[in-house]
Amino acid sequence: MQLNFKKSFISFARDLYKDELKIDLHRPVFEGNEGRYILEAIKSNYVSSVGKRVDEFEEKVAKFTGFRHAVAVVNGTSALHISLQLIDVKPNDEVITQALTFIAPCNAISYCGAKPIFVDVDKETMGMSPKALSSFLNKNTKKISGKVINKSTGREIKACLPMHTFGFPCDIEEISAICKKWHIPLVEDCAESLGSFVKTKHTGKFGKLATLSFNGNKIITTGGGGMIITDDKDLAKKAKHITTTSKVPHPYEFIHDEIGYNYRLPNLNAAMGCAQIEKLDDFLISKKRISEQWESFFNENSVDFFKPLKDFKSNNWLNAIILKSKKEKEEFLNYTNDNDVMTRPIWTLMNDLNMYADSQHDGLKNSYWLQERVVNIPSSVPNSFQSIKIKNEEL
Ligand SMILES: *Cc1c(COP(=O)(O)O)cnc(C)c1O
Image (cartoon, rainbow, N blue to C red; front, side, top):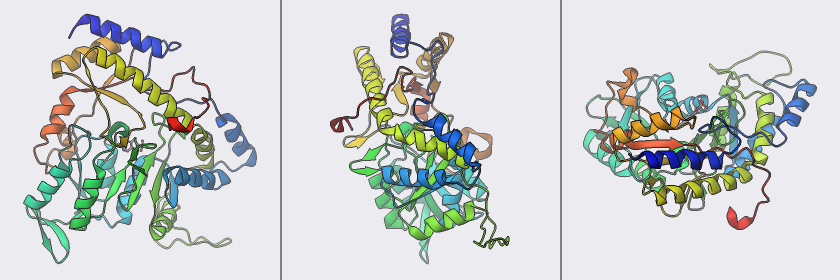
């Protein structure tokens, strides 16, 4: 890889993020009502799991994403854990997911006592490949009295859990059609895709439940936080119940009717979320502009810049490039990080981690191909960001 290219990358990044000495991959922006709302929460004494900001944040996220119900929880991992539990994923069940992902979905599967199965991703989306899913099911499973049974393990496949990598929607319409055909419940991990759309539908709308994360590096943050979003009233009700210790409403008695979790998002964090979501439309516009600038830079330098599928819209959470080889990737990572411009490789494949080394997978050809080449580049909303007047045509 040419030194000139690496040098111009550094100066381009420095130009985009003028006032940052050390340029982050993705840092939060607090230029709205965060301080005010948090202070109000402190003054109200409602800092914990009761308070009006939790309900308000849930309503605002539901409205933005077009879901009927939203249940706020402590992080995206717990949202995944509860979602899987709600669709009856139990010990020794199996869940089909992707190997090219963050660890959270695999942790959630393991918390249920279930086992992941890894199918390949598409090179065009970095998300689960419908073809790989379909071919895995055809080759490796049989239907026995309505259940999808894995022929090699004898276990039941209880869920399919794809993810929208870096905000680029995966081919979820096809995945959803396959899951419907096999009667496998679908949960979408939308931790990275708040503000990403498949045609007119927000990501997450294709399964029974979907989950969001508001960790510090996500498109909006509550410090730590997550949400379960669904159109199913009963599932939402159950989600709220078991994430709030399964307490039966009563003026003073402590009665809990099943094993519950203390997963409720504190009011303090929800207060931050209410301020952050006020800025989400502005963030999305600002991130689109950054992404367009990166795109033209990489086009000029003949480097493959990742784009969503046609008619799909990414929230531009993390920009990604595809380099030519593992060697080129390593050179690029070393040079840029040495120069205080943060870049990161895509994740180690889940089946290459100790805990999942024995998991069943389909060879993961594209996952390995991408793993060797994909790098994320700085994608924050710039610090100089000021409330941009939103023009409808930009959204
Ligand atoms: C961030 C993230 C989550 C959730 O992470 P938390 O830190 O638990 O909020 C889940 N899945 C993916 C793909 C993520 O990137």
